[in-house]
Image 1: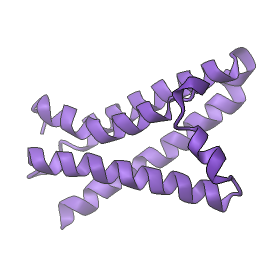
Image 2 (image 1 turned 45 degrees about the vertical axis):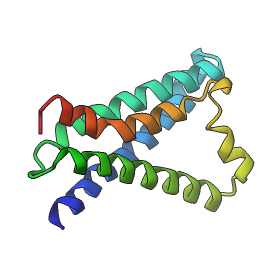
Image 3 (image 1 turned 180 degrees about the vertical axis):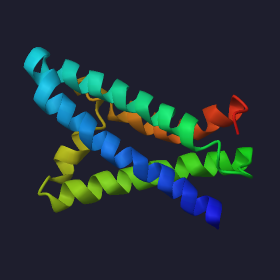
Length: 130
């Protein structure tokens, strides 16, 4: 049970990174780049940050098996989607607006962020860091 609370603790580290990344996109990238380019850059940056955090913080959690890492990725992705929709709906965004983030044709690479969230534990495990 303790390892799963640590796994969720690692996921919690993604939240401030995502918020800071969004701020960087809104207040810096948008000044110099088009909206679609800023969204794409932000998505790639956040996906990379998620992998780095996973690489640094997941290996110290002992006794994680390959199956655990698959479950961790699925859990993290579900938590991320629930958090995103919960926060979006509570702040007044519509379902339509929230679902637009899943369309990469708009430049939004949120799908890449979710794939990084899902796959990072398995990539770290495959590299035998754990």
